[in-house]
Image 1 (spheres, rainbow, N blue to C red):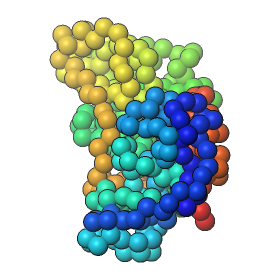
Image 2 (image 1 turned 45 degrees about the vertical axis):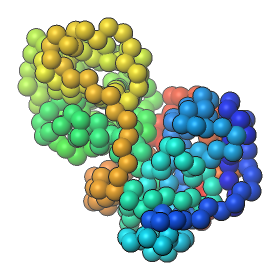
Image 3 (image 1 turned 90 degrees about the vertical axis):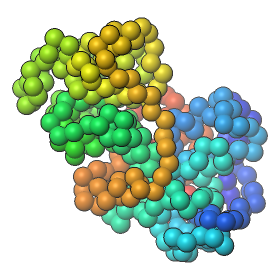
Image 4 (image 1 turned 180 degrees about the vertical axis):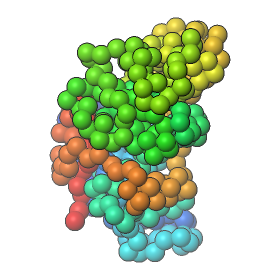
Length: 323
């Protein structure tokens, strides 16, 4: 089969196209004919650092949409021809390839209203946003949430999920992406370069229906998809007993949050079918929609990594593998 492999650890240039053996499904595994593979920051982090055992011959790509081609002898839930999507396991070969093997327990049926390219943009971003906001921060109707990096892959899903949950949504982004963030459900988009999110949420939350800001802050929940000092800068505007979740390292002195009983949740993706099925249902009902910035051919995987690493973009980049 045709695949994009790492010929070493390093820059985007280490991603090369090669013919490799097609994997064989065993046990409850499925052999998926890959139609599209999403590109995520974890892909280039593995490529650059060699974490999760990556090295020469490794195939990246952990967002997958495709069709079941064959099933292992113990598979129970899917049959050849089923359209599926999922977030693949990090410690195994990924889906920058024509075929991919996956345990069926982390696979779900593709949303009927999404094409394969859009479906491949949903699993990692959608699951991460759900687990941060719903599972870990218990976001509920009427709460005020601040999302840092609201136009990125995870951030764009977080804005939509928070809006669907009935929260009052503030989201930071670059100035050129503010209209997009508003269109996804943000009550207030904040230009992270020219505006002070702390002053805006303090003074504007009540105008969007939130309770008046307490001395301890205005946000019930903060979700950091951006990094840097966002967590530290968000502590003063988080309510006493509020929650902050992050998918990147939190830099700086966090002691002020400890003194005010603010919970800091580090979020690393857990894979599973049940939440994928919930995301599929939300997509089919029009409550969430993956934001796809660009669709590139599989052979352009290195270019996709260059674009993603450059930053400043919106949504997801997807590799189209087959029609």
